[in-house]
Length: 518
Image 1 (cartoon, one colour):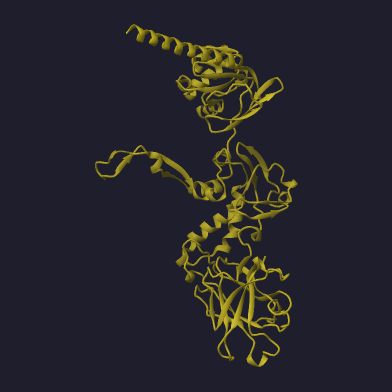
Image 2 (image 1 turned 90 degrees about the vertical axis):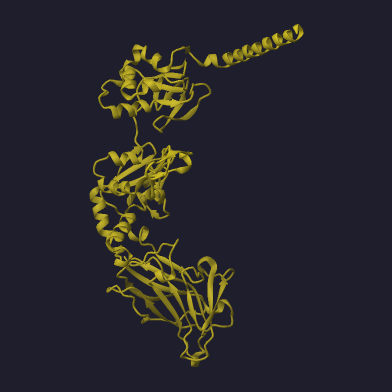
């Protein structure tokens, strides 16, 4: 027994010795970092320093006196009294913003620091930086550093770091942006997160539904599309229209989205118009001088050339925590750059319900031909008719037309792409179907085409017609039916049997193009 006890004592002594050794290593490594150590928690230490009396009052007003008394680790950058002169302690919202902007979780000593982006309690990122032999926090000088307390580290700074709003906060606080704010705020909702809420904590006695320790997640469908204004780790530049700019843009864009009653009428028209206004107001990264850029791309993919003299012209810049905001009194986006881009239907695609009659259709590649065929793909339409009465044709549905004016073109691939010896051109006629001003679907009207003969040796961009569609025909690609597409262009072979010596009765089509008319 004595032998066993002796061994136990030896083991305990060795274990305690190892702890002492580790403690010595810890102190030898970290002690030089700290200029002072205290057994007080952060709040008690701060409250006892007469140089921090104003900040102490701010901690009490904001409720962070109790936070800094907890058994958790924080780092505080405390502004000196003279830095807080004029602070209105009765403005609790402002005081809370400032306080949270100076506290971070975990330890942040100056050791081994060059520049560190510190995540603060208000979800902002502030740079803690070495400047020569000293340090700055948010570009304010650190005058005393590395005071170790019972629950964290304290640094003193010579001025307070102003709370800088992000784009979402700026939108909510800035006068004159009510129209934009109303629209974006109307798209916000808090969605119940079952996974984050964990297991049920009970059952409602009346409804018998499960009860959770509920967690709700902020969602905004428009911000999901154009940019997360409320996130501090996402940097954007955005154009924010004033109320006057919003009204002007709304009235100008609204006619493009004239909608049939069965498709939602005035309500859908308003929703599409509002989305058109905001769809290209956000750009990635912080743009400080748009005049230096040849072009920029919005988060939805639209390209704007010479943005400094175009969409940013006359706008006033404000630097925010997650980017730059440019307030404008006039939205200058052109329709063709934004909400009414050209429509191109690749002939080889069947996704929209392409139809045919009296022909076989074969996809072909133009690779190596030297022709500028879009996506290097076209269709070869092999005419199966042997008379002039049975027409060979292909019908192309055209989705997402607006209630606007377009020039319609059909691009033909030359005959000699398949046989160099065949230099016979083809001929085509066209029929168009759409919703007319009465709200009814028209019959396929034969269009009068000035020149309907293709060039046998090069691409032919044949002008079909110019048309003003009375109603828009927007399609939800996730759930549409081919019958939802009301605009359809039919391309017919127009070569008669008596003309085959001089004309080729087969057709080769690259694409259909609708170009907006300004």
